[in-house]
Length: 281
Ligand code: HPA
Image 1 (cartoon, rainbow, N blue to C red):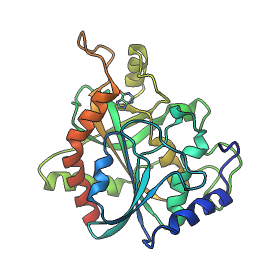
Image 2: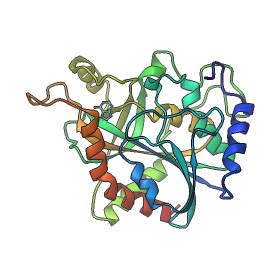
Image 3: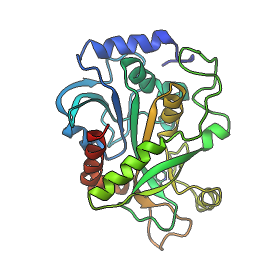
């Protein structure tokens, strides 16, 4: 378990381990969220690297999140997919959760596509929708736990990075056009990052709705902040696996199984979307 802040030595050690298992030079990173692991099956001629032997790599312990890197070609593009991610609620320090993004950057990844499962707060959403993330609410960061807390290494990025247009407007437009070309549409909204693992109370959901959240989830934002710190372009896509509303129908109770099941049903559409986007990158 790492107690201190991530240094270049930590990142280098992890990069060396990954490079010893692959000759690919990935330029596009893909983070696959809850229930979305099967997306990595589309990657061709893949080198598959389990997380365990990679030094300092945070392990994922959650059902539905297998822990391995899948590096290969998707639509002819060299991609590195993180099949399963570590979450803050598993007990990892915030700065360790984001090591994979630092490793991706060091390996040459300049475009990061992050996916997740999220609860829909916006009443216009339905389970099964895909939502482009246009902005985020970092509830933990606002409360003092930002992944960039600690000494800043200028070689990683600036002390005070900008978070305006953190979710690249051109990539969002490309995603919208790709969806339309394939006969479906995308929701667009603000993703609120909470720690979990308990789902939100009705009062918390009323609060999140009031402050402008369209969806809520337990991941993604720390990685996006570190990717932007490093100057990577980011595209974020939430799969709305359930509605997260303060007044659910009587008898409805959210479970992780429901999140995984809806995630599975969205995979074909998400795969079509990602393939279409990759073709144009
Ligand atoms: N809340 C938080 N995280 C989630 C949810 C939710 O309703 N659904 C999927 N991830």
